[in-house]
Image (cartoon, rainbow, N blue to C red; front, top):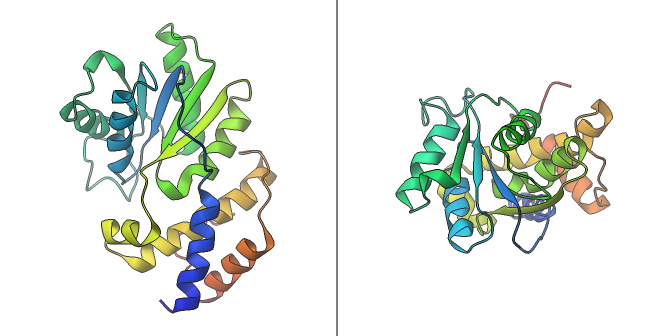
Length: 215
């Protein structure tokens, strides 16, 4: 990756993060993915007293099946338990196959458990904050949404994944969804600054496109 391409990736990385300050919420949702840092962050925020219950949501996908054979939510729960989160503070939603289902199924599970939710701490991969926020705003507009993720710089996240191109492909793919999903009714519309959009187009043209959705 050239210096210009890394600069473009940084623009997109920074845009994806909402910049919210974590604050107490009625409940948290840990969005399933290949990133176990979501469960680590959930445990840290639970121990900080920011929520009484967390829903780990996610089944399996082609990118997580090998790492999490029992499902994303199940492995997240096990990791959180190992970090001292009590079992009665965890709900498991093991069926969701996309972000919309993460939100919808978690909302239903919290309601079934009798938990009244006015605010949600939405915990995701660092580059997924903006898309998760837009999706939750669309599907749960009456809830106050606070986004959180593992506090990593792009360089550190690349090292944790071990594949520079894959990380940039994922940044590009998520921005495509931020741009296009509102047109499909999946998310609320959000402004994408011109410099971020230009960086996105340059990276797509340079071949960072393996995670683009066929829309």
